[in-house]
Length: 67
Image (cartoon, rainbow, N blue to C red; front, side, top):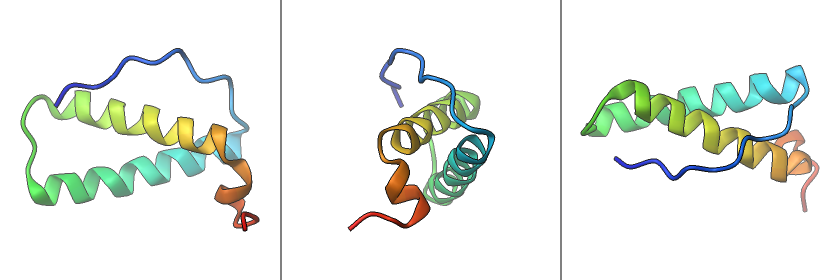
């Protein structure tokens, strides 16, 4: 798995950071059930970065406010 490099995500609130970590952990568990190729630490970090980006870009959706 090759992770795309992105610019650092601006700081999130502690609640948003925790939510992103929970999302990444859930995604990581699904990936592990299906098998991975490459270092698991790279996968875990890539998932966490992507989930942070989702939380940063769509805070209303993460709170359940999105239409």
